[in-house]
Image 1 (spheres, rainbow over the protein chains, first blue to last red):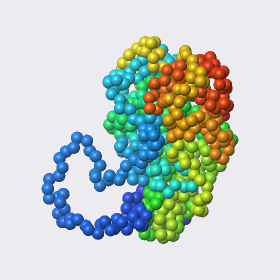
Image 2 (tube, each protein chain N blue to C red; image 1 turned 90 degrees about the vertical axis):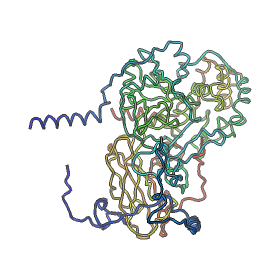
Image 3 (tube, rainbow over the protein chains, first blue to last red; image 1 turned 30 degrees about the horizontal axis):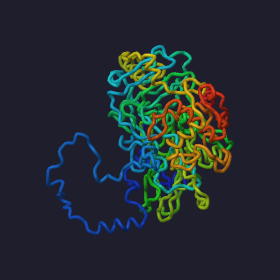
Image 4 (tube, helix red, strand yellow; image 1 turned 90 degrees about the horizontal axis):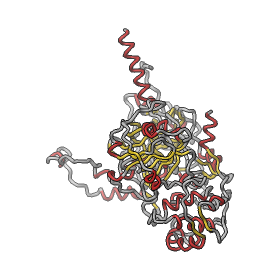
Length: 456
Length: 184
């Protein structure tokens, strides 16, 4: 245990280039840090519009506003966000013909802390969200087992449970970053196919001990009860280690778009393995080599070979504040913030750079630090009105360090589509405008992008 | 003092238990699973494995497949497996090592059995589960033909599908196995 005995003020001298300050300053009295606003700051033209519309203000008595002059609303059976927060929503993109085939990004830049609200958890569906009647849904476990058994939902609700906070990330998250040019979109629409929840359910090992897994079983093949009847193979070893049949998300039963009435939860491994609406698990000596583990969710390398069974999600961090295409309002003291996670375990440290990676300083981490879950980081920064390049870099407990984009592309090429986890860079111009870029230099404007987001 | 030590020891055990209770410790459930009959299992078992396990009886020809494609697939996948709102199935001109690699059944897919498994379980997207085993064999045969993998007179069944040699069968590096070897 380390005691905080020193009353010596922490210096406001930068600890790294371009105004990064000591993270202990957050604990010091007498200093005011400003958070960046994501909503208000848009392109200058839009700001002017906002100013115009606010030219005719509604008369609100500041001493006794209307909501203090009449009784409030009665109780509600199920709470919803304030109508003033109706711009906080998922960001969907889907096939032009089949609207249920696509993905919906979680608006990371509009969220705080380390838990994703259920209504804003990212979505990836291959053929829509099935509307399942739990009375007509059961789980079959069969194949290399002593007893082939059905489990009804009512019965499963009587099994001992366990809860675990962990992220789920789509293997295709961040894939627009393989493009030659950086998209200017906010971080949620680039890296938002990841979310973090507290999940509760039955350890798979409990169910497997009941059916009696045979010695030659090495894989399980899970199948969902959606229109796609999606099947995926998962090594039995992982299933026995920490996988669960999840029934609850953030305290309530799963939402339909997250697998109601039950889904697999495979902590730290790619999202598609966390099979939603699961209805059948076959124990096998080999993987099924499903479409989604051969021609999809594999990464083509420059050699022409593809990486297959890339199951673990590598460590990644992204800055969620400030946000691309917004303004840093004026020079001053700010709090840079973001999230970091690793499929291999705990986040060990997050470093931030304001000078394009020349120098780095360690960020403060919000505890507790949970393995395979979001860790929120924060960094004090004094912006002096000069150009800056912001980056974050995570190191996990295994010593794995998040790579620079050049390094990742050199190893993998640009046609892997999945498992992009490189460092993200935000350029801050001298007028405070923030833009997502790959490098300090201008991007190559002539080369086309891969059109990656539309490839369903 | 002994009491305090005992409490501390309990707290320590408690905290270890809380984080690691799943590792190696299997919690018994109330054993409520209901036996499934072999018939019930067979009706639900639609996984088709690369070694041929799970392949049903039945057959279909390239010619039959072309007709089924016209009525069930062409709206999204286009003429000859190319050009619709869905991704290309055939007709790749650029190899996997080119600047613009084209990932199709012919250039990327390692197993013909996957094509049968996927088509039968997921396609067509607007009426999944509507294709018979014969129709699935026929469509699989036609898609393999479109990719120049089989001859036009092929009749596909559980035996002939096992003789199909996919061009990219050896095009994969198993990262999970690789990491496991490293860990050992």
